[in-house]
Length: 356
Image 1 (cartoon, rainbow, N blue to C red):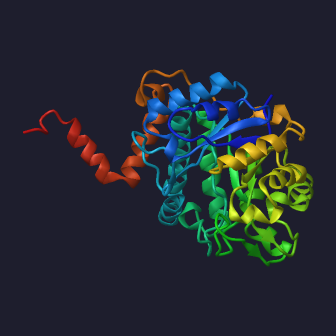
Image 2 (cartoon, one colour):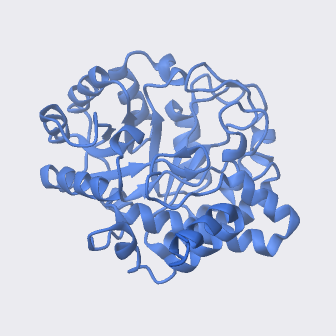
């Protein structure tokens, strides 16, 4: 049974405490951070070990590209999504093609090391947010819709489910909800006609949503992730979305309005989230696991849709990724477009006369 909690672990290999936590009945997921990553082979071993101790578990990561990329050493670099937006402004057709390549490349390499999903794409508008910025594809909703749809098409073709974040949009307010309370005072109509459009118009591509830890004060006095109005009335009923709802990290400052971590987990699940994330706070994770015992299990069929099509490990990342038909082409396209200097350096290294 998949539980309602997604937690993190300490390092590059499981500790006895990690194993104890992963085996808790209501722990249904593990999210990896940079501290859990040394190289591709180590990550695959770690993921296999996690599943040895708990077969019914989702493993996730934030591998958006740009500054938010937990998998770096030995992995293909990914541009920030804002660079796709810039390319789209110059050449729409090429921008859309590279968005597909980015989605496919990211998904293939994440799946290759045993991780089910990357929490992507970011569907927020590039506005005044301190934390979004170039994580967003663009400022204009229609451009985000076009680029994100191609990015998600690439993800799905590689075998990965998609997660749109941060519903209904984090880009229009300056405070970073990781470290401060964030309040958006716009009307529901204004939000729905602008920031929410990339979510509403890409629903056919979306398998999951992650609500923002933002209070939209004209709609509810609670952050969206704790709001039945946003999660049940708007997402489930008005938008008719039946995918997974992940809370954002309940250790963030923007979630503190709901009380201690036990109260936050209960509030998120009761409001409509399927899985609650508790990260970077081991004491809180233990408290959350205990509190979650009182909660019902999430819809198992819904959760299983997030399981990735993980390939057989072939001993190294490149050999494993060769099992994805389009991986090499996607990689070449991204490197040539966004990292040409690095590509030339790699070509020099492969030249047998380069030592002369």
